[in-house]
Length: 617
Ligand code: ARG
Image (tube, rainbow, N blue to C red):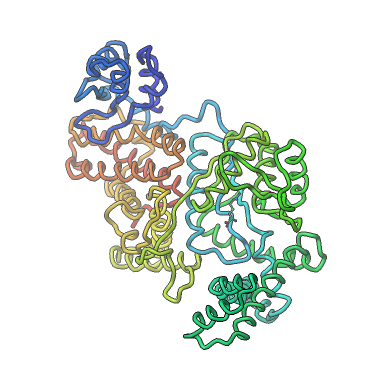
């Protein structure tokens, strides 16, 4: 049962006539300091302001009308017009008994299940995944699990970048620089080498030409003397001759052009390029799959950009037909009011764009699944793209879907720049996961020498992977965060390991007391909430359903991590205050039930975050 939702509906009914009842109801929030109560209604101040009345009087009017008696005590008015709500202890105690016997821990399946498509991970396949892909993969998977846990129908879609410019680079590399032996030995490694090689060959010319841009402009305008003078100044330190610079730039342009031509040929159905694509793809997908398996991520569909290729021409035609797209300097573009810049759907050379593919994708998703919600878990740098995309889709009448960009910030190194290794390469994801497990292993070896070699290995795997996931999910997703091994592997503080350890600690209580939890769940008579720390823990326990709902509505996994951290802290205070195994008989089962509920919520909550638990740590 979602108690917050229940209280909100009571406030919806009791809302003053001169206010928006649903806004008034949503101003009811859980509060974290039990001194003031468990929930607080903050809507009266706004009503009073509008009326020019005393907010405490408005609050009094609401308190007279609202009926919370099934769950809460008489509400109290506090401060400038807050209404504080405290759950009834007797009701809480009863409800905990119900929860003990409830496999779903109070989470009721949604009355009207939504169909939710989640577009996440979605890497460009030709290059190995790096640390930047962690966020989309981990956040997307977590949102999928949150929605599923609430009883919604989720479609996980890995929108692979398997058709873009990067594939042209690989094709060019293959045709000009391949090492077949290396390919036979390790195909993905060789493809990655070719990709990097093409990129490196294109780059020097690009950076050089940027530097010499003004020189070229002078030349174009016929100002040769100025061009020469500027050139001399720019080249003074590098001793480069004019010919050398020209040669580097020309070569890089030629390679860039050749790569583009390979991409164009692939799209046009050139048999050789298609055959190479078919040959390379299974290796690229295999390498990704290794990582997904390790992260326990699985997709329902992997409809990459290539899947939509055949729909692109038609997409543009339709946009033209309904008068949304038009020609501009040879290209086909859509102007939207939301964004000053036009969205190019077909370039003047006939090529379709990333945006065209996304439009076709949006339409396909709507027609195939009729989703209520489509989430795009993609880097914040693509915000403008999605704003435009959604505006164009709405203008084109692509159904009633609610598309949302779930943006996130960048993972930074200690230097506050995007996280890189010492040699300047962006850290590969696989080696990052290995390092996490190795570091966790060192911690486990130090802390738990009593565990067997095999057990320590297993603990290290779940703690290491859990640390990376938790560090990511516990951030407000919109902010950048600093990747810090020591912090994320700490046994204390807001970390995955702390929660995993809290779970294992409860299991060890059960082992020590030889408690059979199944029979405990059946026999709990009533839960006693005599001490403040028992009550505080109980209130956290009953908040699981509303927390998942809040996390789903705000699309924020950190709402869940904050909750679990708070739960673990309350448990720790309770455990310091109250003997459990040594408690008097009338309290023992009740306290064991609190332990059991806490452990079950930790396990479920961590699983929703994509993190496993171990009974011994
Ligand atoms: N492949 C893209 C990239 O790596 C992300 C794709 C996100 N999804 C989408 N429908 N545009 O930048």
